[in-house]
Image (cartoon, rainbow, N blue to C red; front, side):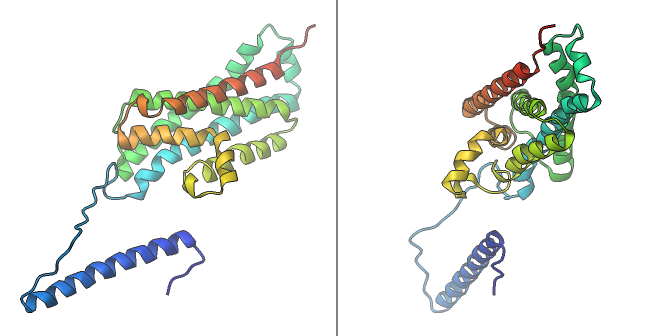
Length: 256
């Protein structure tokens, strides 16, 4: 009897039980034939070799995804609230008439969260290595190139949200629905994208975490170089340029 309320768990359970029963049944049949002085002829001898995660440890699959999920929380939500907070306090007008340029204002609003996010990524990698034995097989340089580009995209999204919101509540809701939920549901972090409906697969292309997970898992689990994920970096860079450009344009100071 299998509880089918959770289809994924039920399917996995049935597969495990079927494999165990089939293996045990083959051993019993081999013993019976051996007693009769015969051998079982096996036309195909399957010997699967699993790459990158031979033990099929779930943690090695989830830890790279956690990096992207946590970075989205820090970058998008925090950045989206920063500019809106200035609007609510009435200090945004003071910034606009100050000698600071728009670029300097954006740098001041995003650099702290960029540093915090980079520190958080280091902590996640350390926790994954110490507690779950998830080591980075590839180049740390290329991993942090991917993290940096991803953070630019996330910061650009947060900045854009902050320019179209008037209150922190609105900014928080928009940031959650446009970043955290897609990062969890549409990035391949938990559910395979290929098993989703076609409409959701198309929508998933608008979420940078989907492309960052490919980079993170390629470097951490497979140990490959940029030749395997350069196109993912290009997409995230395009996303960052578009969102940062629009956010900057909306923050341009009005002429005095």
